[in-house]
Length: 292
Image 1 (cartoon, rainbow, N blue to C red):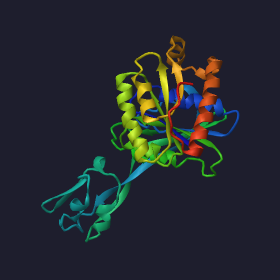
Image 2: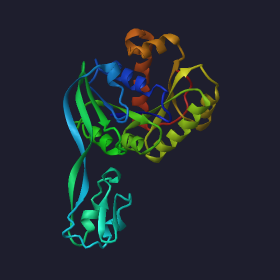
Image 3: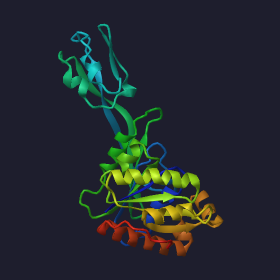
Image 4: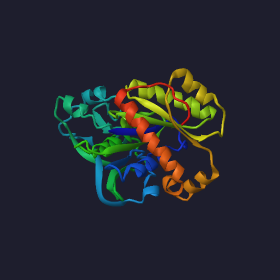
Protein backbone atom coordinates (compact mmCIF):
# COMPACT_ATOMS: atom_id res chain seq x y z
CA UNK A 1 0.00 0.00 0.00
CA UNK A 2 1.21 3.48 -0.89
CA UNK A 3 0.02 6.15 1.56
CA UNK A 4 0.61 9.82 0.77
CA UNK A 5 0.58 12.27 3.67
CA UNK A 6 -0.26 15.76 2.41
CA UNK A 7 -1.64 19.09 3.57
CA UNK A 8 -3.13 22.15 1.96
CA UNK A 9 -0.71 24.40 3.86
CA UNK A 10 2.64 24.17 5.55
CA UNK A 11 3.10 23.81 9.29
CA UNK A 12 0.13 21.52 9.97
CA UNK A 13 2.26 18.58 11.14
CA UNK A 14 2.40 16.55 7.95
CA UNK A 15 5.93 15.26 8.56
CA UNK A 16 5.01 14.48 12.18
CA UNK A 17 2.20 12.20 11.00
CA UNK A 18 4.32 10.51 8.31
CA UNK A 19 7.30 9.86 10.59
CA UNK A 20 5.31 8.63 13.59
CA UNK A 21 3.11 6.38 11.45
CA UNK A 22 6.27 4.79 10.02
CA UNK A 23 7.71 4.34 13.53
CA UNK A 24 4.48 2.73 14.69
CA UNK A 25 4.49 0.17 11.87
CA UNK A 26 8.20 -0.64 11.58
CA UNK A 27 8.19 -3.55 14.05
CA UNK A 28 5.11 -5.19 12.55
CA UNK A 29 5.78 -4.94 8.81
CA UNK A 30 8.37 -3.68 6.29
CA UNK A 31 8.07 0.09 5.88
CA UNK A 32 9.48 2.53 3.36
CA UNK A 33 9.34 6.29 3.96
CA UNK A 34 9.85 8.66 1.04
CA UNK A 35 10.39 12.35 1.75
CA UNK A 36 9.10 14.01 -1.43
CA UNK A 37 9.20 17.52 0.00
CA UNK A 38 12.31 17.98 -2.11
CA UNK A 39 12.53 21.76 -1.66
CA UNK A 40 12.81 21.39 2.11
CA UNK A 41 13.08 17.75 3.25
CA UNK A 42 12.98 17.40 7.03
CA UNK A 43 11.91 13.84 7.89
CA UNK A 44 15.60 12.97 8.40
CA UNK A 45 15.70 15.35 11.38
CA UNK A 46 13.46 12.93 13.30
CA UNK A 47 14.55 9.56 11.90
CA UNK A 48 18.33 10.21 11.72
CA UNK A 49 18.85 7.72 8.88
CA UNK A 50 22.18 6.37 7.72
CA UNK A 51 22.29 7.58 4.11
CA UNK A 52 24.68 5.37 2.16
CA UNK A 53 23.52 5.92 -1.44
CA UNK A 54 23.41 9.23 -3.33
CA UNK A 55 22.30 9.57 -6.96
CA UNK A 56 22.21 12.67 -9.13
CA UNK A 57 18.95 13.69 -10.79
CA UNK A 58 19.41 15.12 -14.26
CA UNK A 59 17.21 16.65 -16.93
CA UNK A 60 18.01 16.59 -20.68
CA UNK A 61 18.42 20.14 -22.00
CA UNK A 62 18.99 21.22 -25.62
CA UNK A 63 22.34 22.06 -27.14
CA UNK A 64 22.26 23.82 -30.52
CA UNK A 65 24.80 23.11 -33.25
CA UNK A 66 24.85 26.52 -34.91
CA UNK A 67 26.72 25.15 -37.92
CA UNK A 68 23.58 23.14 -38.79
CA UNK A 69 20.91 25.56 -37.57
CA UNK A 70 19.19 27.63 -40.26
CA UNK A 71 17.25 29.82 -37.80
CA UNK A 72 13.82 28.55 -38.89
CA UNK A 73 12.40 28.98 -35.35
CA UNK A 74 10.59 25.63 -35.27
CA UNK A 75 12.17 24.81 -31.89
CA UNK A 76 10.85 28.03 -30.40
CA UNK A 77 7.35 27.29 -31.72
CA UNK A 78 7.09 23.87 -30.09
CA UNK A 79 8.55 24.91 -26.70
CA UNK A 80 5.72 25.61 -24.25
CA UNK A 81 8.08 27.05 -21.65
CA UNK A 82 10.10 29.58 -23.72
CA UNK A 83 13.27 27.68 -22.90
CA UNK A 84 14.56 28.08 -26.44
CA UNK A 85 13.94 31.07 -28.70
CA UNK A 86 15.01 32.14 -32.17
CA UNK A 87 16.05 35.75 -32.65
CA UNK A 88 16.64 36.32 -36.32
CA UNK A 89 18.98 33.53 -37.34
CA UNK A 90 20.34 32.99 -33.84
CA UNK A 91 18.90 30.48 -31.34
CA UNK A 92 19.24 30.99 -27.59
CA UNK A 93 18.71 28.34 -24.89
CA UNK A 94 17.63 29.03 -21.29
CA UNK A 95 18.41 25.77 -19.44
CA UNK A 96 16.74 26.90 -16.21
CA UNK A 97 13.38 27.06 -18.01
CA UNK A 98 13.70 23.71 -19.79
CA UNK A 99 11.39 20.89 -18.66
CA UNK A 100 13.28 18.23 -20.62
CA UNK A 101 10.38 17.27 -22.92
CA UNK A 102 12.65 16.80 -25.95
CA UNK A 103 10.24 18.50 -28.35
CA UNK A 104 12.79 20.93 -29.79
CA UNK A 105 15.25 18.20 -30.78
CA UNK A 106 12.50 15.96 -32.11
CA UNK A 107 11.00 18.57 -34.42
CA UNK A 108 14.16 20.35 -35.56
CA UNK A 109 14.17 19.91 -39.38
CA UNK A 110 17.94 20.32 -39.56
CA UNK A 111 18.79 17.89 -36.71
CA UNK A 112 20.75 20.73 -35.20
CA UNK A 113 19.65 20.12 -31.60
CA UNK A 114 21.03 17.44 -29.32
CA UNK A 115 20.56 17.01 -25.57
CA UNK A 116 22.89 16.91 -22.60
CA UNK A 117 22.09 16.13 -18.96
CA UNK A 118 21.84 19.00 -16.48
CA UNK A 119 21.97 18.18 -12.77
CA UNK A 120 18.89 19.49 -10.92
CA UNK A 121 18.99 17.59 -7.64
CA UNK A 122 19.91 14.47 -5.74
CA UNK A 123 18.19 11.39 -4.31
CA UNK A 124 19.63 9.94 -1.09
CA UNK A 125 18.65 6.61 0.42
CA UNK A 126 19.49 4.48 3.41
CA UNK A 127 17.91 3.09 6.58
CA UNK A 128 16.63 4.40 9.89
CA UNK A 129 16.36 1.34 12.07
CA UNK A 130 14.10 -1.03 10.15
CA UNK A 131 12.64 1.77 8.02
CA UNK A 132 13.93 2.09 4.47
CA UNK A 133 14.37 5.81 3.93
CA UNK A 134 14.57 7.84 0.68
CA UNK A 135 14.68 11.60 0.31
CA UNK A 136 15.12 14.02 -2.57
CA UNK A 137 16.76 17.41 -2.56
CA UNK A 138 16.43 19.88 -5.41
CA UNK A 139 19.41 22.12 -6.16
CA UNK A 140 19.16 25.66 -4.82
CA UNK A 141 17.86 27.99 -7.52
CA UNK A 142 16.31 25.21 -9.59
CA UNK A 143 12.55 25.74 -10.05
CA UNK A 144 11.74 22.21 -11.23
CA UNK A 145 10.80 20.02 -8.27
CA UNK A 146 8.53 17.43 -9.99
CA UNK A 147 11.37 15.57 -11.79
CA UNK A 148 13.16 15.14 -8.45
CA UNK A 149 9.89 13.97 -6.85
CA UNK A 150 9.50 11.38 -9.61
CA UNK A 151 13.09 10.25 -9.07
CA UNK A 152 12.33 9.68 -5.37
CA UNK A 153 9.16 7.75 -6.21
CA UNK A 154 11.08 5.55 -8.63
CA UNK A 155 12.54 3.95 -5.48
CA UNK A 156 9.14 2.65 -4.35
CA UNK A 157 9.36 -1.05 -3.55
CA UNK A 158 8.68 -2.79 -6.87
CA UNK A 159 7.77 -6.05 -5.13
CA UNK A 160 4.85 -4.31 -3.40
CA UNK A 161 5.51 -6.03 -0.07
CA UNK A 162 6.21 -2.85 1.92
CA UNK A 163 3.96 -0.17 3.29
CA UNK A 164 5.14 2.98 1.51
CA UNK A 165 4.58 6.31 3.27
CA UNK A 166 5.12 9.43 1.17
CA UNK A 167 5.74 12.74 2.94
CA UNK A 168 4.41 15.12 0.28
CA UNK A 169 5.18 18.83 -0.06
CA UNK A 170 2.66 21.34 1.34
CA UNK A 171 0.17 23.12 -0.88
CA UNK A 172 -1.57 22.00 -4.07
CA UNK A 173 1.03 22.76 -6.75
CA UNK A 174 2.75 20.50 -9.31
CA UNK A 175 5.17 18.82 -6.81
CA UNK A 176 2.16 17.83 -4.67
CA UNK A 177 0.35 16.31 -7.63
CA UNK A 178 3.52 14.41 -8.60
CA UNK A 179 3.81 13.10 -5.02
CA UNK A 180 0.17 12.01 -4.69
CA UNK A 181 -0.23 10.44 -8.11
CA UNK A 182 -0.80 6.65 -8.08
CA UNK A 183 -1.13 6.50 -4.27
CA UNK A 184 -3.62 4.07 -2.73
CA UNK A 185 -4.69 6.48 0.00
CA UNK A 186 -4.11 10.12 0.95
CA UNK A 187 -3.96 11.36 4.55
CA UNK A 188 -4.69 15.09 4.62
CA UNK A 189 -3.29 16.79 7.72
CA UNK A 190 -4.94 20.01 8.81
CA UNK A 191 -5.53 22.25 11.81
CA UNK A 192 -8.76 23.78 13.22
CA UNK A 193 -8.18 27.32 11.97
CA UNK A 194 -9.72 29.34 9.11
CA UNK A 195 -6.52 28.98 7.08
CA UNK A 196 -6.41 25.25 7.82
CA UNK A 197 -9.98 24.75 6.61
CA UNK A 198 -9.53 26.90 3.50
CA UNK A 199 -6.44 25.02 2.37
CA UNK A 200 -7.89 21.63 3.31
CA UNK A 201 -10.75 22.24 0.87
CA UNK A 202 -8.18 22.87 -1.89
CA UNK A 203 -6.25 19.71 -0.99
CA UNK A 204 -9.44 17.65 -1.03
CA UNK A 205 -10.16 18.92 -4.54
CA UNK A 206 -6.74 17.64 -5.64
CA UNK A 207 -7.34 14.20 -4.09
CA UNK A 208 -10.74 13.99 -5.77
CA UNK A 209 -9.29 15.02 -9.13
CA UNK A 210 -6.66 12.28 -8.82
CA UNK A 211 -9.37 9.81 -7.70
CA UNK A 212 -7.53 8.85 -4.50
CA UNK A 213 -9.46 7.80 -1.36
CA UNK A 214 -8.68 10.20 1.47
CA UNK A 215 -9.27 11.03 5.10
CA UNK A 216 -8.36 13.85 7.45
CA UNK A 217 -6.09 14.04 10.48
CA UNK A 218 -6.72 17.10 12.66
CA UNK A 219 -3.58 18.22 14.44
CA UNK A 220 -3.63 20.59 17.42
CA UNK A 221 -7.29 19.74 17.93
CA UNK A 222 -9.08 22.01 20.36
CA UNK A 223 -6.88 24.98 19.54
CA UNK A 224 -9.30 26.69 17.14
CA UNK A 225 -12.96 26.68 16.19
CA UNK A 226 -15.29 23.84 15.21
CA UNK A 227 -15.83 24.92 11.60
CA UNK A 228 -13.47 22.19 10.42
CA UNK A 229 -15.51 19.38 11.99
CA UNK A 230 -18.71 20.96 10.71
CA UNK A 231 -17.30 20.94 7.18
CA UNK A 232 -16.14 17.30 7.42
CA UNK A 233 -19.55 16.24 8.72
CA UNK A 234 -21.40 18.12 5.99
CA UNK A 235 -19.16 16.83 3.18
CA UNK A 236 -18.93 13.29 4.64
CA UNK A 237 -15.14 13.50 4.92
CA UNK A 238 -13.77 10.81 7.27
CA UNK A 239 -11.85 12.16 10.26
CA UNK A 240 -9.19 9.51 10.89
CA UNK A 241 -7.57 10.96 14.00
CA UNK A 242 -7.47 14.02 16.21
CA UNK A 243 -4.26 14.92 18.02
CA UNK A 244 -5.04 17.35 20.85
CA UNK A 245 -3.13 20.58 21.29
CA UNK A 246 -0.59 19.83 24.02
CA UNK A 247 2.48 21.84 24.93
CA UNK A 248 4.36 18.59 25.68
CA UNK A 249 3.84 17.42 22.09
CA UNK A 250 5.09 20.75 20.75
CA UNK A 251 8.20 20.60 22.95
CA UNK A 252 8.91 17.04 21.79
CA UNK A 253 8.65 18.09 18.15
CA UNK A 254 10.83 21.17 18.68
CA UNK A 255 13.76 19.11 19.91
CA UNK A 256 13.38 16.52 17.14
CA UNK A 257 11.76 13.91 19.38
CA UNK A 258 9.46 11.07 18.39
CA UNK A 259 5.94 11.39 19.71
CA UNK A 260 5.07 7.67 19.68
CA UNK A 261 8.16 6.85 21.73
CA UNK A 262 7.60 9.49 24.40
CA UNK A 263 3.81 9.27 24.66
CA UNK A 264 2.38 5.71 24.68
CA UNK A 265 -1.18 6.98 24.20
CA UNK A 266 -0.18 8.39 20.82
CA UNK A 267 1.33 5.11 19.69
CA UNK A 268 -2.03 3.46 20.23
CA UNK A 269 -3.72 6.34 18.40
CA UNK A 270 -1.41 5.83 15.41
CA UNK A 271 -2.23 2.12 15.41
CA UNK A 272 -5.91 3.02 15.12
CA UNK A 273 -5.01 5.46 12.36
CA UNK A 274 -3.33 2.67 10.40
CA UNK A 275 -6.35 0.40 10.85
CA UNK A 276 -8.69 3.10 9.53
CA UNK A 277 -6.43 3.84 6.55
CA UNK A 278 -6.28 0.16 5.64
CA UNK A 279 -10.04 -0.22 5.92
CA UNK A 280 -10.86 2.88 3.86
CA UNK A 281 -8.23 2.13 1.20
CA UNK A 282 -9.64 -1.35 0.79
CA UNK A 283 -13.29 -0.38 0.59
CA UNK A 284 -12.89 3.06 -0.97
CA UNK A 285 -15.38 4.27 1.63
CA UNK A 286 -15.48 8.00 2.27
CA UNK A 287 -17.93 8.98 4.95
CA UNK A 288 -17.72 11.20 8.00
CA UNK A 289 -16.64 9.69 11.25
CA UNK A 290 -16.30 11.82 14.33
CA UNK A 291 -13.20 12.34 16.43
CA UNK A 292 -11.35 9.19 17.52
